[in-house]
Length: 330
Image (tube, rainbow, N blue to C red; front, side, top):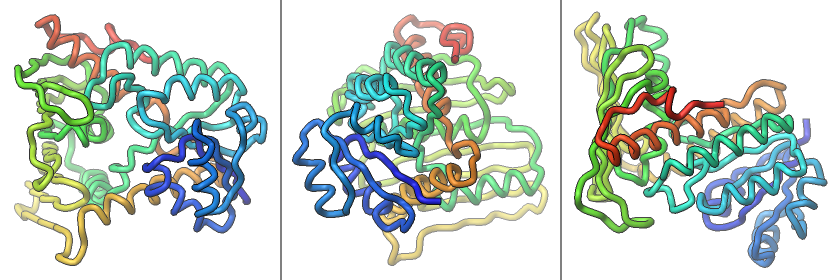
């Protein structure tokens, strides 16, 4: 099945993480639009494909899917213009909406993202998210372990995260352990300057399945070390995932064994990080060929922003937040 894929936004993330993979897929042809046309022309010259003059022209070409790869601050505006033409499918970079940058998500970002997904649903447009961390080897292995070893209920989750990985970590927590029900958060007094200033955020939460958890987000963590550390505790065992597809520790209470895995010395974490984009997009394209649901639906992007919005409200108002009541989904 031959596919036509539209690329909206041909900046660095598109040219380094998405288009190189797509250009190597035999049955995919590419269309481009960028606000600065020359950038789209440069991308087409390097990787092949056709540049179109407007968003309207791109949608009118009826590609099988459009990848929305603009920066998060422009994504809402561009997506709404795309939705005016009722495209078949939209695939979004993360976070879904962040008008002040990914380190400074606000409540309004959740509401704009919900409006966006409602517009897509009403117009018959299928939406999907990248969330490429789901496609790390250690994450996929962790999912299999939990499913195959019958470890029972989730009990607790904990995460220590650099804001560069923040939305991914929130997505992973809910993908493994389920939607959040209540949160209580505090914001630290120190502002770090990375992709816009942001304070440390410490939150505790209860999930809908009654598991509890904690999360700490910071920009003060050095990039030379692990960028996130997530611990998932169940009745039958515990899993620890560290950094970009780098390390995993499994403690199996039933066998009383501890299993550890790590990257071999010749592999960089940035290599595995880069490869995860191809896996994510490859799985998405295969879902289109198979006529199935996207592997990561657009709703996952809204759930991530729902969690962030609840953390921000709790910290601002000094009280616990009933997430599903105060920030209802679609």
